[in-house]
Length: 316
Ligand SMILES: Cc1cc2nc3c(=O)[nH]c(=O)nc-3n(C[C@H](O)[C@H](O)[C@H](O)COP(=O)(O)OP(=O)(O)OC[C@H]3O[C@@H](n4cnc5c(N)ncnc54)[C@H](O)[C@@H]3O)c2cc1C
Image 1 (cartoon, rainbow, N blue to C red):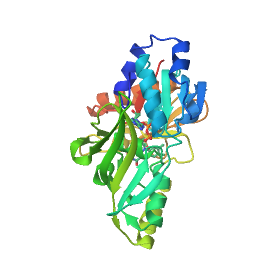
Image 2 (cartoon, rainbow, N blue to C red):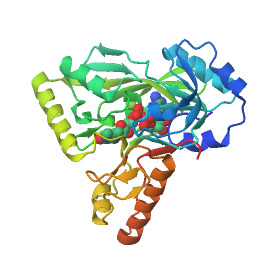
Image 3 (cartoon, protein in one colour):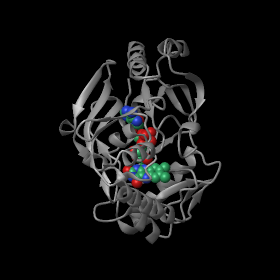
Image 4 (spheres, protein in one colour):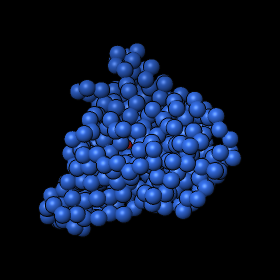
């Protein structure tokens, strides 16, 4: 079974030894909706991607446990999609794609702890925290992912990172059982958290008392800054490359004159060189070719190897 993170990329491709009848059996009895041959472009901010054998939207954590157990029994790979840091190849994803869009509960707990189910979007969570005068998440203003995806990616901005606020992570493991991890048990790295394999179904965040108007101002200013510097009106998956040590990938790409470079409808954004945008009908193959062009040019001209922040998954 393939679950969580970049490792899923390879596992999804290698292990497609199951039938469509197996897939149907693995999603039987779920209370959340099930979509066969679903277009994955609808689940991504890039608006790119081929079909999934099936997409499931578990109704609750119990439903997540059930689909994991049933998939495991039939050796069917699972892949979790939040959708905002993903490039899904044009052949789509074989096996079961899990979307947590229905896991949306948020609860304030004693000691300024905020618990959110994995499918809660960061913008919603920040809005809730501000309304309840809980400070500590303002750094994440403008990150569109789910709170679970933000933990997996250790999402961050100039103002902070996910690891600064995570108190505990609640997962469904490969056996379909719920497990809780304290933040101290999780090695967080630059844009990655070394979590055990499984599905993040909830996150507890340690926040602190805040002043609502002050938090609103930080968020508003940061959203303005993003609007001025990022191509937010076009489909994208945020930054494509990780920043090399002590430098900025966007600056390097701009230096070699690749702003505006295109392959098909995939374009290096003219507003922010570390974003690639879909000008309408871009295919994953176009984006991958453009990534190759940028990497090769930077390596040859600047001598720097750019690593991907974007996760590329699925079949060509
Ligand atoms: C306009 C824009 C701006 C952005 N700005 C930023 C930014 O400032 N900083 C930043 O860090 N990122 C940014 N991003 C990228 C993105 O929002 C983050 O990386 C975010 O953390 C991804 O969350 P997601 O839920 O969309 O996960 P996805 O992109 O779907 O998934 C990322 C990885 O996590 C895995 N995963 C997702 N959910 C789960 C789960 N529940 N359990 C186990 N594994 C899971 C996936 O399988 C995949 O390997 C931006 C994206 C866009 C489109």
